[in-house]
Image (tube, rainbow, N blue to C red; front, side):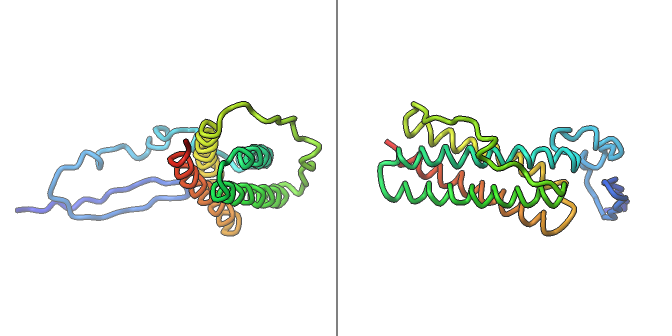
Length: 185
């Protein structure tokens, strides 16, 4: 049996990578036109650093809103164990807020206004505990998508590492909310 030797070129941002391999089977994946692949990628996934900075600014407020929402959720939680789980999530949101503020300052040289100045009035909602847990779960999953987009623009290892820690926290939070939803009555 003859083995066809092919060289596959994949064009990536920042240069060309070449892959050489031995293939004895047809694989339609390798027939893609890599030069046009970038246009096939969901454009919402790829953002500029300036867009990421705007998202970081928005994320500071989002994290503060989450913190307030979780304070209300803690009051609704029926057991000490559930309250402690939600408190740990809320405390992470406080940490995320500070990390994002620091990143914003690193990139812009500007300090964001204090949260009391920009805080909207968030009142207690009238939804039941389980519904609020479900809302919290999907809020965390949406945050993962947002942080993934920002992460792709980070120019340094430190900012990348900080955003990766936030993103993995959000995934942990989603798991915790799944646990709480399963136990909610």
